[in-house]
Length: 201
Image (tube, rainbow, N blue to C red; front, side):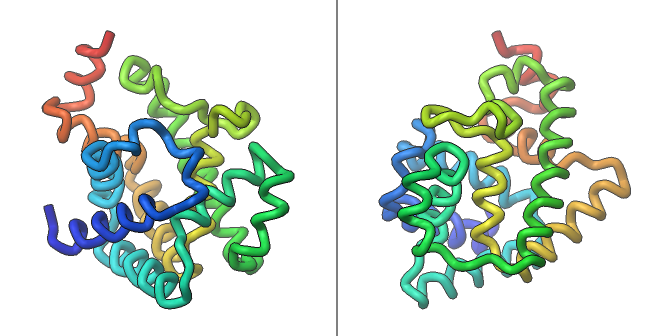
């Protein structure tokens, strides 16, 4: 694993473990090893420029006394617990119109990819989060809400780089959600998504 990715994972884990609002976090993330597998699969799909920009976001937030991982879970509450979100909202940065536009655009691209992924590999994805935020409730957060909430913690610079990478992927017919899932199953010992999908019960 690339040293810079490892440093980023270590920092993310420390912030995650210190996030008081992470009570909504998935049970798989209670274990550091599973956290590393999940996050490294995502980060491995990112360009070096995107990784560096996210690293700078985290370090800048730390310097300001903020925890972006905690902020992600606050953003999730907007959809699943509006009253609690209203109480905690003053603790998260105000978003510009450009940021909101980029978040919407990137999130929609990922939702489209995730829809295609679930059709292509139904066994692997059968226990995944519901895709659309219309399925959100206090016990379960959708893929769309989870992605949107994380994107809201990125700087505009990072979002621009992410949008650029997505555009490049779209032009060549590449699905970044599929790349991330493939990175995940390879860490679990499968040689391909096809093999993993055929071995899932």
